[in-house]
Length: 417
Image (tube, rainbow, N blue to C red; front, side, top):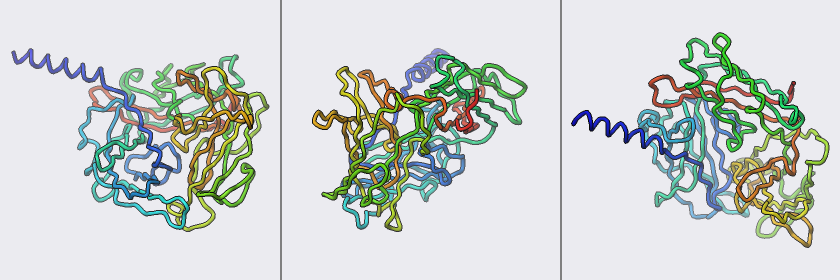
């Protein structure tokens, strides 16, 4: 009987593991804006944090209620299914604590409260394991308001990256391929084709990441990845930009300004770039930076501005839509980013409420199945400057979680064949 009980619980555990749900980020409600999460030393909007480094989460609540918010931190496997670690195994201290550091906006047309969460703090001392994490923000009623992913790594291996043009002649002028070399350092990988997993990220966008490529071959203690198509990304084009650090002054992207209840900045109409030659334009690869010319503390003194977008594009009559795309909202696609065709002006139009700063954006086409085509309007070019990051995960035999043992970074500035 005792043996049968053991078999029953073992099978039940396998069943639970098999049906573990992949967890996705929860987008914030309309009154939550300007979410950033990063390490103490990193300015990237994709928070990849070295083990032992602090974490900084900031956001604004525009409802003027000075709400109380609480945070929880959860650990995940490589595929974003919940890991089997208990919280005390990866978290030093306690979570489910109130965010006590907040300030109200000062001298702004838009009233908001700015919340700041720093880890470590008095209750949460830090994280003790590498891996995938998600921080979840709850309100007073224990309702999930939004969540954000972040990744903690430790350098236990060396990760080399080389950006090449596609080896598939059909895409040599429109795609970029990432070659990877992973050196195990002082220890040997056990069965690397099963225990090693990789994540390749272009321009800090997890939505388009390539996951779980297997090493093609081994040279000494190095794992080599040189795929023809599996590690290729569309080259895309340089991002467009808008600059609202001074809402009273027009710049290269702004055609006019108006002050109503808030400032309104009207951008010049953008054009289709897919049928035009590539032109280099320095960008920040889809990211954004909160900044303002006036004020000492932009976190509470930067104002919110309605930014009006216009795209010169013929109306779609099939089931496709055009969206504004960038890290300003974590690359989310929803009703707020959807462009609407205006028959009178002949433009696709939309407006977004954005905090003063410098923003990258582009236009993408989405079909009725939710598939994204980033190059339909902007175009794809092999010489586009893109940033790439490669994360290496390792689950040793008998281990209960996926460690992140290496980070490599490269750029396509010096792309080669």
